Each structure stands twice: as C-alpha cells, then as structure tokens.
Amino acid sequence: MNSEQNAIAKIGKYLSESKRAIAFTGAGISTESGVADFRSPGGIWSRYQPVLFRDFLTSEDARRQYWKMKKEGFHELKMAKPNDGHRALARLEVEGMLAAIITQNIDGLHQEAGSRCVLELHGTSRYCLCLECGARFSPDEIQERLEAGVEIPLCTHCGGLLKSATISFGQALPADVLTEAFDLSMSTDLVLALGSSLVVEPAASIPLQAKNNGAKLVIINHTETPLDRLADAVVHQSIGETLSRVIKNLGLEPQLEPAAGSGQPAVANN
Ligand code: ZN
Image 1 (cartoon, rainbow, N blue to C red):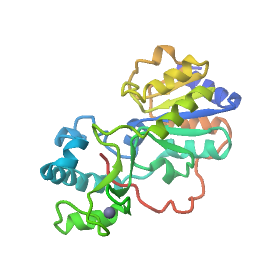
Image 2: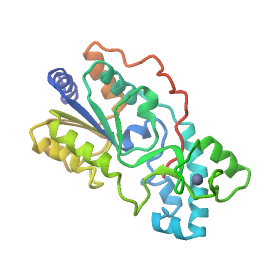
Image 3: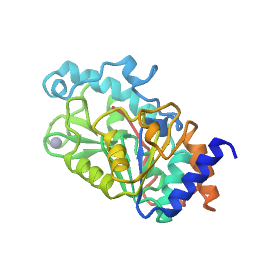
Image 4: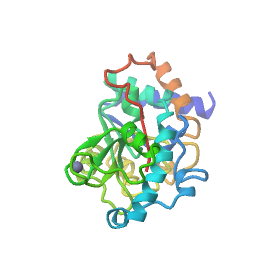
C-alpha cells in the first residue's frame, strides 16, 4: 500500500469509528467546481480592490465598484456546479456519518449538493439583503438590473442599500455562527479539513481547537498547511477524487437524489 492508499484507508476507518464527525471546508473544494479562489492570481481580488464594509456604507464610488465586481462574480458562480467532493459530504451526512459542515465558502454549493447542516462563516451569495428593511432579493433579479445598466441597485420596498449576504472586509463574522462552529469543534471527534490553507483566522483555529481537544484531524488540500504536522492523515490531492475513493471503500454511492429546492443556482462572490 502506498502512502496515499494508506491515508485513504485511514480516513475511511476514522469515519466508521467516529460518532460526531464534522467537515471544515475552504476555497479548495470549490475551485474543483471552477470557482476561482478570489485570493489567488486571476481571482477576483487580483483585479478588484475588495470594498471595505465601512466604505460601502459611506461612499457611492465604493458601492459602484462593489456592484461592478459583483456583476462579474454573479456570472462566474452561476456557472458553478457541485463536484464529487460536495456530493461525498452530502452522502456522508445522509448516512449519519457527518454531523455538520463549517465552510469559509459563500457559493452555496454544499447545499446544492444536498447537505443540510452547513454553517457559513462568511455568509452567502445566494441572496442579497436590504440593509434597511431586511428584504431579500435573488441574485438573478439584481443581476438583471445590473445588466440593464443600473450601477447601484436599491431596495424596491424602501429604497435602502442592498448588499450580497456575504461578510465583507471590515464586517464582523456572524457571532451566532462562529459560536456554533467553535461549540462543534469542542464536541467533535473527527475533523475533515478540506481545501483550506488553514491560515485565515479565526476560522483556521476551529480544526486546531478540535485537535487539541482530542479529535482526529484529517487534511485534504493541494498544498501543505501549517497543521499538516499535527494531522492524523494528510492527502495533497484533489478533494473530489480522494473523498470519492474514501466513500467507495465504505460501500457508499456519492450521488444523492436532487434535494427539493436545490434548483436555485449558486451565485456571486465577495
Ligand atoms: Zn428595504
């Protein structure tokens, strides 16, 4: 058995033995669906300066810039579909082998694959929100207005500022979601850290806290991470391929029946 087969066998064994496994996912699981990591070269932040939340609130220029970036992001993410990695996690949840997913991603691809218990640390691009009255708008509707030449879309109910329901720079992470994620890290016995460089804080400390609390730690990521040396199994390969092999070894099929309401496309990024 080579080291990769060995790691895949170990991951399967850990999943079978675990009582309360969780997954922690980052951009790497979605790049396999063609969603560019916006931090990487060619990603949206190499072409646009991210708009700080404070600037968004106070400057019309910043809002114009924000929606210009969104217009491009909406289109890119609308094309993205869940891959084998998302599907494998959805299958594990259905089988009772995965309690929750904590994600740094905003693309909604976990839900589209059929996962139910998903904590989104950075919000979601699946809808836009009026910052005044809280009304929700579909990204499709907003995109239509942007493409018709509107530079800064406003709420059609109250005229308030609209924004994607993602967390911007300078905006606090949602406290309730963060608390729940850290609670999970204290109750889990197995963390699968997938496609995250494990450097963006405070999110990256979730798998570390779990490990320090006695959980097993599995890392699947294309490149090395600072936590590799602490992990119980590490694979530097495609997440989709690796998880497909893991669940095949467990005798499971990756594909779920399409979930009700999963027809809504994933959109936008921040
Ligand atoms: Zn409103």
